[in-house]
Image 1 (cartoon, one colour):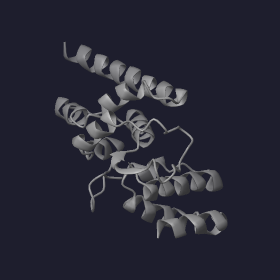
Image 2 (spheres, one colour):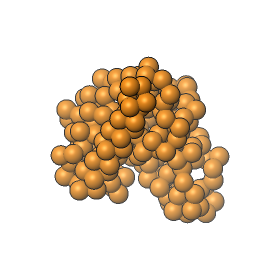
Image 3 (cartoon, one colour):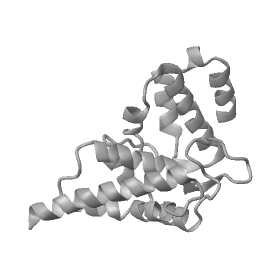
Image 4 (tube, one colour):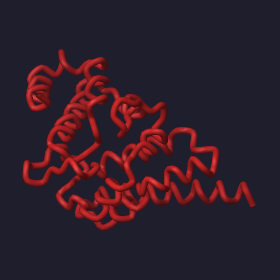
Length: 183
């Protein structure tokens, strides 16, 4: 079904790239490296290119938990399954590049989160109002997403390494400010 949608979006991007259509796709997007999720990500990039609009506000309502929605990127990150994030760290997709959206059928895996998607979602979280409580920070750290950034520092793609380093530095600075405020 997603393959057919991907073809339709690419054949008629002017007609298909509508916010209502994209919003529906985000509800079925799981953020994994499955072929279906990579095709949805490809459609989201096509939408951004066609409409000159970012899908980031729509992705802030994304949730890793089926049949639920988040209100912020922080909520979306907190919905991640820490076991799957850890499994993504230990089986890091070396083939993944920042600008590639479609892997070949031998490299896709629905048991792994897409590290590029998580890096970009974390970037959005850092642009929003940050968690105000220590519990919210702890819940974020329990997802193992920071471990994924550390693992991303050894990615083949230099842009992934650079993005991961920027996220780690940004997180460090925010936590440092938070700690100084409590001392």
